[in-house]
Image (tube, rainbow, N blue to C red):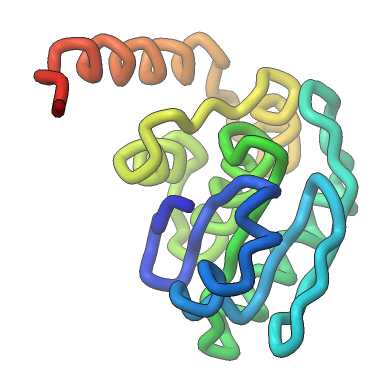
Length: 159
């Protein structure tokens, strides 16, 4: 699970199953994009989203509204998809954009700083650009991803 902000986390589906992990991270709400999981005391919204497919504006709006409402209620939010690298990242980008008035590119950079494997799928990125009327070519995102990968390879391995 990656902490993007003190209130915003991105994670994998399997992490939604671990109540102790959620409790330790003080997760009060979960936006679930892969499968629905329920836990006592944790509000959740399940929005089925397929990776590699365009994201409907209704799904995007519903997910971001859920995240922002949870934050307004002082709840930590976990956005979870299968692997925690594309669908969850896409909703987190939109949430940061709206919550902090960032551009899509700046929101992605903020997420990538805490979650180096963040890789929104082309179709999801295009859906964000269409929804927010920002024209950021996917090649720009790919360059940032490849730069991150190159930096990771230069770092010394920790035994």
